[in-house]
Image (cartoon, rainbow, N blue to C red; front, side):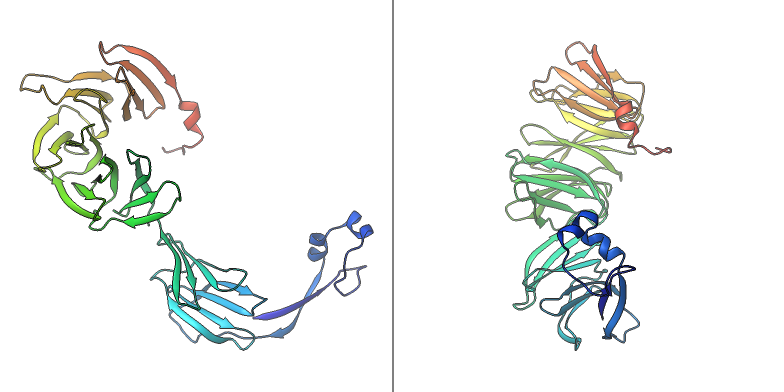
Length: 361
């Protein structure tokens, strides 16, 4: 570590002095610092003598003469200056500590680990965690509110499902036995059960009382699930796959595969249940939306089809169930009459999403 002094540039006396009223009219403290001349008054050396770790981040408390050093191995050290004697050392994770900070009283140390998306606050005197937050390691893929609006469930590219308090904004649990591939959809069957679909070919039901996976739903053949929906009663769960292009239907309680819906010519990107009836809408990259009646199906019944002319990426029913909205990859929203299948209106949002797209999207 080094101690510094600075003195003014040309026309300024070589010392730090209080600014007078006349000075403030012509310059400010920021300009004075920019024009200053810097030099060393003393030097203190820190050397860990290690070839396996490097210093990545540091924070210094001048009032308490404490230096915090974060290393590339996930280890941090607390040192007293100017002797650079080690006071405390702890390994927080296996990834780099990207940033560190000290609170004004120098009791709490904050650490950020970019790779693991961790935020940690450590009280070094009592050696306890004040706060320990961890996000999804590779980004968030999907999100869903609980029926009461208190809990938010998120699924990540890292295959984990996390639960967040919607009021505090903190993650309070990461569900165990999560997926081995990216989570593509999360839905609440009721306030105490959350379901997650994944590219690993499974749909998992999680108990929010004991935080355990109590049921796993699988297809009769290997596939990757891209979308999911749960009916209003919470008794039926459906998942759409990338290939083969079909929708699997299970009983939530028994876990039995009760039906397989086929007819799409592309991956099923979105599913939505009618808020009142037992019908299911499926949106596909083949440019169509199909509406299935799960309770009146027989070998000869065919779903009602709404053609959109472009890859459909999402679908939703109006709360009263009278209209169906489909969204295409071109930014076009189409509103359909559920009763007669007629097109009511369109909203072109291509210009709204154009700014967020890259040339190859």
